[in-house]
Structure formats: C-alpha cells, structure tokens
Length: 160
Ligand SMILES: CC(C)(COP(=O)(O)OP(=O)(O)OC[C@H]1O[C@@H](n2cnc3c(N)ncnc32)[C@H](O)[C@@H]1OP(=O)(O)O)[C@@H](O)C(=O)NCCC(=O)NCCS
Image 1 (tube, rainbow, N blue to C red):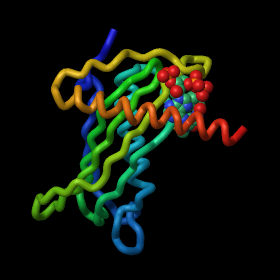
Image 2 (image 1 turned 90 degrees about the horizontal axis):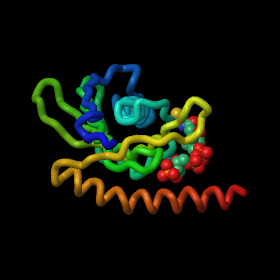
Image 3 (image 1 turned 90 degrees about the vertical axis):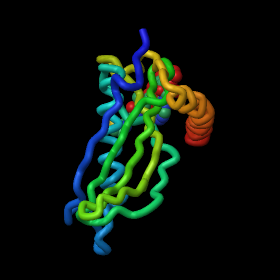
Image 4 (image 1 turned 45 degrees about the vertical axis):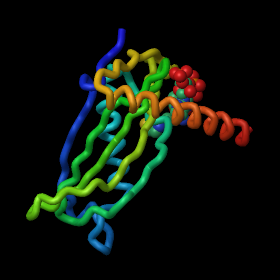
C-alpha cells in the first residue's frame, strides 16, 4: 500500500541563537545540516513507521548565509521511494524577524534507509504523488537515484 506525500511532510521553524553561529554572526553550516537531518528523519519515520538511518546526502547547496536572530524555516517531503529507501527533499529559507523578508538559503536531498529489528533493509510504502509538482519531483528524483546508486557502487568497488 502506498502513502501520500502529505502524510509525512513536515514544516518547522527555529530561531538562530548565539551558540549556533560562528565569529561572523552566521549560522554554522554543520548546525543547519543537523537540523535538516533531524526534520528529514521525522519525515522518514512518518512515511515508513520503521527505524531509519541516513544513507546519503547529496546536492547540498548553501546559497546564502543565515544571520544570528533570523528565523530558519525548514520544509521536508518525500520525493521518491525504492524498496527500502526514501529520498527526502529539504528546503530551507531564512526570515528577518523585523522586516519579515524571506530568502531561500539551502536545499539538499537526504536518503534514508528503513531497517527491520535485525538491522536489515526493510520494505516501505511506495510514495503516491498527487499534484503535478509532486509528479515532477518524482520524475526528477529517478535520475538522481540512478546517479546515487552508481556513485555508491563505484565507492564500494574502490574501497575493496
Ligand atoms: C545504510 C545501510 C543500512 C545500508 O546497508 P546495506 O547492507 O548496504 O543495505 P543494502 O545493500 O541491503 O541496501 C538496502 C537499500 O539501501 C540502499 N542503500 C544502501 N546504502 C545506501 C546509502 N549509503 N545511500 C543511499 N542508499 C543506500 C540500497 O541501494 C538498497 O536500496 P533498495 O531498497 O532500492 O534495494 C548501512 O550502510 C549503514 O548502516 N550505514 C550507516 C548509516 C548511518 O550510520 N547513518 C548515520 C547515522 S543515522
């Protein structure tokens, strides 16, 4: 049985505090990736209702910095599924608390693998795209999935 994108889509907001920033007053990239992985895993849990691990992160682009005191908006949704993996797109934007101006800052695709109780890859529901946008995202994701599998296979070969 499949699951709709909307059943696991998550949005959240967080304000950038001094401990999240470097000496220039910008949000650490690593902290943002942690927040992205956190929201991505929530989407993966909601879609699979199984234990999940982060398998890979690709096309992670930091387009502009996020400043201390800004609100960070995170949006996470499943774009593609295979037998036991979920590709999850995470989009980030920042908001100036005084002016309300928003700016898209970051996008990445996280792939989570669902596991059973013995730690083996485990089957998950197929994604059911409804809107035209969701259908387009799924088509685009197929190319990324092929590329990712090839990259994984090359890496495994090179390490052996
Ligand atoms: C991800 C992991 C569970 C895969 O284990 P594995 O024994 O190689 O799994 P399999 O080869 O049976 O692959 C299972 C599926 O995951 C996919 N996959 C495996 N490793 C992957 C990776 N690193 N990235 C993306 N997809 C991956 C496979 O293509 C396969 O897809 P399918 O469902 O379409 O068949 C294992 O490599 C692992 O535990 N990695 C560490 C995860 C981790 O610690 N993450 C950070 C903290 S959460």
